[in-house]
Image 1 (spheres, one colour):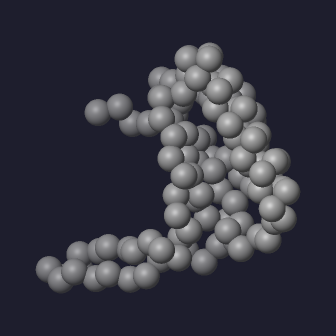
Image 2 (spheres, rainbow, N blue to C red):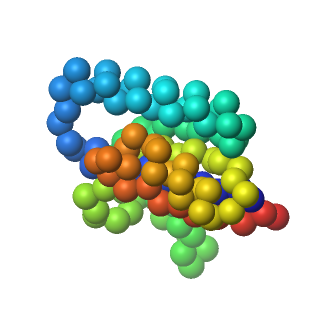
Length: 113
């Protein structure tokens, strides 16, 4: 079954260049491990939520607003799509994402169409 692992963290957190390099290396290592396991289907890093737009159609009219929609401390920074045998394996994979140490990983099953 496929799962979306949504990486949520504080976009406004200030980190040093050294920490940024350490995190990049940790993500690279995680991705290589998951590719070797054969569970990694896809991944994307997202630009900050402030660059997003919210689109709605109300009463036949288009409403466009600057994002993010919700005022929260954490925003979705990126995601992985993994193919795991069950929720337990998806949670195990999510716990290995480096951002789990300083943010939140939401594990959500993909609704197969």
